[in-house]
Length: 499
Image (cartoon, rainbow, N blue to C red; front, side):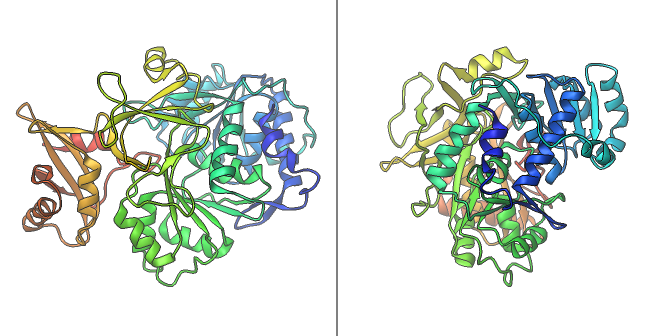
């Protein structure tokens, strides 16, 4: 089994001339993408990259990302991906941590991080390919490339965790993980089909987007649309009108920004039949605003780098607002209490998930691997409860669940309550210790000028909607909430900022 064969080459010869990839500048057929991936594979092999050697991609989204991804897969190298826009010290971290034999990047990123790259070239890095500088060199390689000696159980891709508790960790996945989730989630749940066109807000270095906007569409011969620039609400709306996608991969923060964008009311979103959301909790109020505007369902789900992709989700035509839906076929879930026993329906427990796409381990972190990967089960650290219909409701991370005055409080519940207030744009609720006692702080980005009176009104709002003990004891106003490179709220940064 080879990922290039499973997701790209199988489209030949029947779909050779079909558009595989659309960009603002031009379209690329499946034949062209196969040929360019072979050029990259031959280049890497010629540079001495062997099976299971790591190849680090530090690229914007575009044809070179897709071609080099499958070029590395073709020869049996292990694909690692990073956000190319991170600071130089993070480049040093990724180059050292992956011990990559090859780096594929762009001139702007090379120029900004040349000392770090040169240092790596004096170590184990054998080649640095700068795609917009070395285009002629890449083009001279042949358009056929033999597969490496790969199987479904060989290491194939590292997906990085979000790094919420330190530096990102590489989750080591074998090739079969990607085929399994594609069959169960993309094909069986989403019903992705050949005539679909996909567009993504998150970037391809993020495993969520690698699946929905590269592997899933090409698995069925559909078309993906890629753009290199950072996602903005204005840009995403313009790309939807330009490319006419049928499936849009999104995140709650961008959904909110798109609705608040001045051009949202007049934007033509009629091509979209399905919106996917993951990465952070989708507030029910935001779902209602979106469906009122567009009439299109949002399929909110949860996945992780440890499992490759989505394993619990709302299904098409079966969305229950405020829940993450049901378990994807082929996966099993448990909610486990502190005593190690499963909790009864309605109680909060830690989610354990089992399925054939779980990672082997975290690279260079044996202790964390042992606590997370327990036989066939992956311990997520996410807190859930399940209702009588078998639908899962997200209650936050284990380290986010707060015990205030001896009673547990779910930050997600308080955040959803505050988001229903017209004055609130964004909010994150965190727990901090004050005088040795846990207290709650709501960090709020508001639509109106922040005042002490507004803080009191928001506290009163929560008291009127939820049990009184759940109101935030402190309200701090920010222009915007800090986020990591995957778009998640940087809660640790918020906690550290409270004085």
